[in-house]
Each structure stands twice: as structure tokens, then as C-alpha cells.
Length: 150
Length: 78
Image (cartoon, rainbow over all chains, first blue to last red; front, side, top):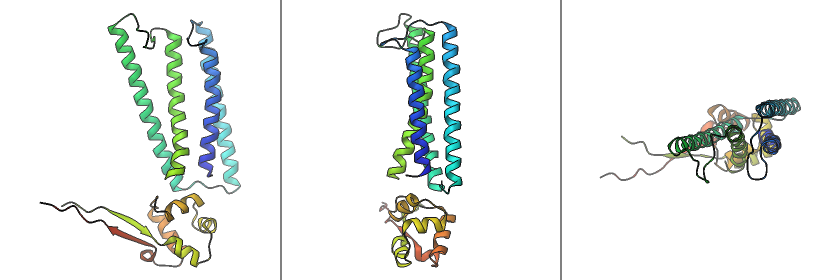
């Protein structure tokens, strides 16, 4: 396993843990209840702090591995670049699905059961945060997959 | 005029074994990971020119001995 794969695996694990925290703070059963603005602000700041701390820890660990002789070469750089593209594509699609939901709800003010209620701010907040995690997760998964198949 | 597609073949595996090097030894010599050497030998990954030259030098063979370009037959045109 290369350093790039290990980094991707650890980063994915940290992202899943932080997303579990986010979901635990926002979701009640299968719905997102009304929440105070203070609670949403606190959740956002905490998720941001945890994510930053996680990436700092991963990078510090990767630097220590490099000092011990672990290597990242041109193929790793190419894999990360490709994985970045996949993350970007998924984000682009997800944001467009969200825009589609906004347009649907501007056309039909009463949201259908199968649409996201984007007029509900806690829901919109959670969906936007989930898209960020989705992009990051797809990138890390693609690093792991491409490292094995290319 | 359309240029025929092609693929880059290599003799790295044979020449590396002849030189008595493991994939890890060879990777250390050229500054790549073992996984990259594995992918190049399996012709799943085409190395950069810099890495290709490093490989030729590490095995003390001319570049053309290590890498060959095989042109595919172009599609017949009417």
C-alpha cells in the first residue's frame, strides 16, 4: 500500500466519523427537525474545526512517513488528479440536483414528499454539508480504487 | 491525415530480472514506488519521459531497448 492510499484511507475514515457527528447533530430519526440558529452555527464551526484538525493530523503523519522514506511518485500525483476530477464531477451533479430541487419548489410552493424541503434552513444546511462530504469521500474512494486498477 | 493510435511496450521486467533486481530494488533506484513499477511492467501505466530515462540508465540499456512503440493498423479509409 502506498502512502497516497494510506492517506486516502485515513482521510476517508476521519470524514466518515465527522459526518456521523454532523448527522447525529442534525437528524432525528428520518427527518431534520427545526433547530435554533445557534445550534446550526455551533455544528458548522465544530465540523469545520474537526475537519481542519483531521487534515492537519493526516498531513503531519504523512510528513513523518516521508521523512522515514515513504515515497509519493508521478503515478500517485496522476491518481490524485484523476480522483479530484471525479470528486468535482460528483459535486457538480449534486449541486445541480439541489438547484433542480430549488427550481421545483419555486414552481410548486408546497414541496412534494419525494423532494428535499430546501425552504427549511436546517435541511438546506445539512444537504450542503453532505455534498461537501460526498465530494471528499468520492475523491478518497477513487484514490483507493484507481491505485488498485491503474 | 489521421495518425494511427499506438501503445508503448516495454522490456523492463525481463531486463530487471536479468540485472538481478527485485521490483522494490528497482523502484528505489529510480525513485518510484513498487506499485508504479508493477503498473509499468504490466503496461497499465506509461511513465513520464524523465522516469523512463531514469529506468534506462538504471538498467544501463539504451532507451529504445527498454521501450518500443507499436503502432496499431489504421482503419481502412474509403
